[in-house]
Image (cartoon, rainbow, N blue to C red; front, side, top):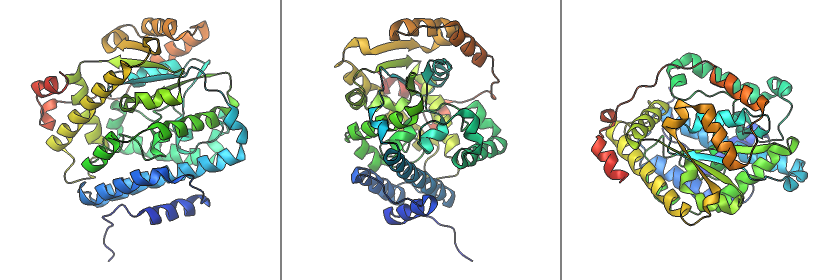
Amino acid sequence: MQSERTDVGTIEDLHASATRLTGLDVFGDDSYREGMATLLSAYRTEAALTPAGSKAFRGMLRAALVSRLLSEAAWRQYPEHAGVPVTRPVFVTGLPRTGTTALHRLLTADPAHQGPELWLTEAPQPRPPRETWASNPFFAALQAGYEQHHVADPEFMGVHYIAADQVEECWRLLVQSMTSVSFECIAHIPSYSQWLDSHDWTDAYRRHRRNLQLIGLNDLDRRWVLKNPSHLFALDALLAAYPDAVVIQTHRAPRTVIASVCSLNAHASEGWSGLFRGEVLGRAQLELWSRGLRKFAIERAGHDPAHFVDVDYDDFVADPIGTIESVYERIGSTLTAEARAAMTSLQAGPRGPAHRYDLADFGLTPADVDAAFE
């Protein structure tokens, strides 16, 4: 009987697998290979992966390579993407669990705005008419997978609901460059964390922008609104690629944030490692996100304050539309009656189960969090 695989693989066999899936073999420049090699080494020597974890991370890296292949092919197919403007994009960021998702989805409900639908971050291409999505094989496969996940794990809907046709975080565009804290959120990989902390993200954001130009090729008159907590770690690189960007930073009490993000990441990675759980997970997430917020604060101080808008979580929860109105004033957009109606309708949508979490489950105390964020 064949034993279960307990390794993620090599660069060579992951590339071969991505090529078999797509029939494509042009991965673009080699700048991503250093990060990929560092990740594979960390998975092998540090992460204590289970067979399920090895399979999950192999799938994640292969998906990133597939996305690279699809981007490279689409850029060749649609060379006009290079002339697509990305004017005054809006980036929503902040610690995880601070309302970034809800704020992002309200902002992208405005017909004048566009966000990256999840399936298009996995299979970058000019956004086709929505009525054709169901017949697209990439969309259909992703949608079926998420629908199966919702049935198998309905509790996750209360943590972070996702679907292929919904606007989502743009970290998958950064994963094409193997440059993302998403890897650190679901595995114990300290050597990759150290590498990423000293790595220049500028090339990753240039690729990110080029993907937006491709995806938005058919929507030239709509303003981009993006969201990702990991933008905290690379503000200088973000603004180098998007010098006219507006950055919305959300704020919430760190004690609540850390308990919630630990719960989210424990749930997302359950059964994948014999090590990444409990206190190990808690300490890693506390270090990661306190470091990210410190780095963002330092880099923010070096840029024109006009780039930034601040949103308090409690204010947003108490008055979502009022908060949106104040954001629109700052970002120079007009909140039309149509946009207001779309946002109000979105607010009235279904909610998942309540998300429950406790710092003690991850070996942390309120004093630990206070000290880290002091």
